[in-house]
Length: 321
Ligand SMILES: NC(=O)c1ccc[n+]([C@@H]2O[C@H](COP(=O)([O-])OP(=O)(O)OC[C@H]3O[C@@H](n4cnc5c(N)ncnc54)[C@H](OP(=O)(O)O)[C@@H]3O)[C@@H](O)[C@H]2O)c1
Image 1 (spheres, rainbow, N blue to C red):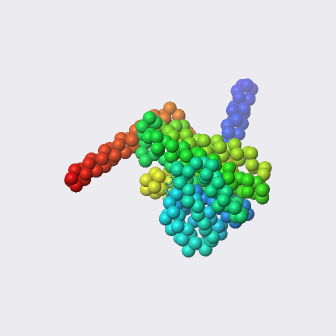
Image 2 (cartoon, rainbow, N blue to C red):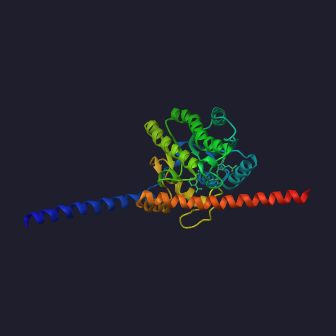
Image 3 (tube, rainbow, N blue to C red):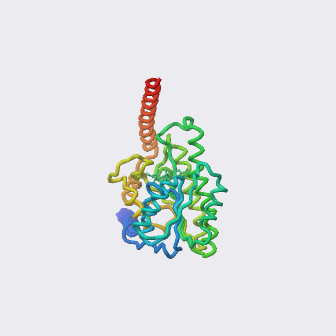
């Protein structure tokens, strides 16, 4: 009887500790997600550099930073889009805005770094957001990715981010403060696999590891480095409409700005975080099989769209003859 009592006390104590741990974890989640005060980004410096600032998440972040009084250096490949974004931001927020044109797909890493170094010369840069990114137009097997697309994804997602970070860190080191945000993806951190969009997810996996490591290298030098890993956001990359789990870039950027300067790997949007929790609870084998079927469906859809387009083009060509 005494043995049974001891067993019951031990198991209930262990159970109680487990419940407490879950509760404390939940309270911490509520704190960081909704209550923790955001850092004052202007304390890092008066200028922010944003790549991919002509569309989607990067553009929304540019407006968010400008609303907080930060001056902006926009980095993009399309001079017209850069000019329009610059005018919109200046008119709406009255901050200083400059831009530098770089097509990350076409320019070498060293050249990108050189252009960024020249562009930031004399600016008090406190913040860098590596937001530019490229994915497949639709899902496909790895051997089906043509060489140009393959080269572009590696250059934009991986090489450019690495070289731009290298170009900006010395000026932050000099003043012993700064923050860097790399936009990774839940595809490489939350999900166990991302088949048929392999190269994209793999480059984002690189960004997560790159950020985790350099964040340790520079934390004690006053530079806060972070990788944000969103799930779906409604942008031209995903072609998805906004919904409960798919925020607009504006909503995403409002949320993600609150996280800058804190943890090194974050899922800033609270419904993505809930989604991530649920995904992680599903056995990997089940998730793998679901993801494969999900992307096979989108591959088939993309292929059929492509073949319809090809038919229309050949019809138009034969009509004009
Ligand atoms: N949307 C999502 O669901 C989602 C989820 C996870 C992670 N992300 C990541 O979030 C970041 C932003 O994505 P998004 O959804 O906002 O995509 P987006 O709307 O397509 O915007 C991508 C940005 O990158 C720029 N860019 C693309 N190729 C470039 C190149 N060769 N040189 C210079 N700039 C280039 C684009 O310029 P243009 O305006 O000239 O096209 C655009 O400003 C990406 O890194 C993406 O991987 C997105």
